[in-house]
Picture 1 (tube, rainbow, N blue to C red):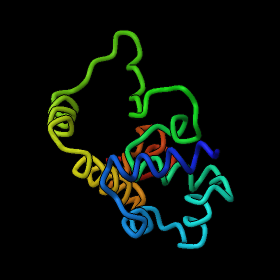
Picture 2: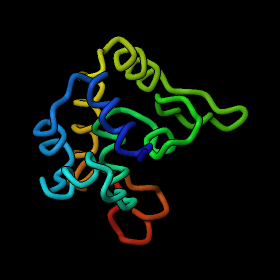
Picture 3: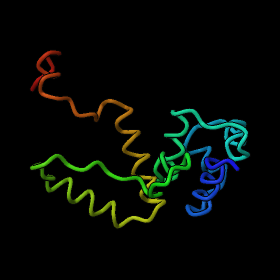
Picture 4: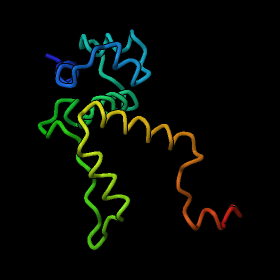
Length: 132
């Protein structure tokens, strides 16, 4: 029994996702995906991360560890608080179904990947001369 392939199939069933949907969300090629589902190969870290993100599951759960299926958010540092915008975003995110949550993650990943919308720290902007 291959736990990763079993967990992958289970997550796809729970999320009502077909292989073609997972291929589109992850960019993994069909041959590799078929091998993962058949249990012939284990996904490497990059593909494991893409699969977990697309399925909204924990990477640790996906590889068979005895942990919750749902990914956990990092715990804020002691004394830190969320801004009003962050609270609003989390409330809206929590009100979405699994498909909506996956779309939010995909969309925000795309925004970060573009680079144009990525936050630049004050230190970086001072060093590069792009400060306001």
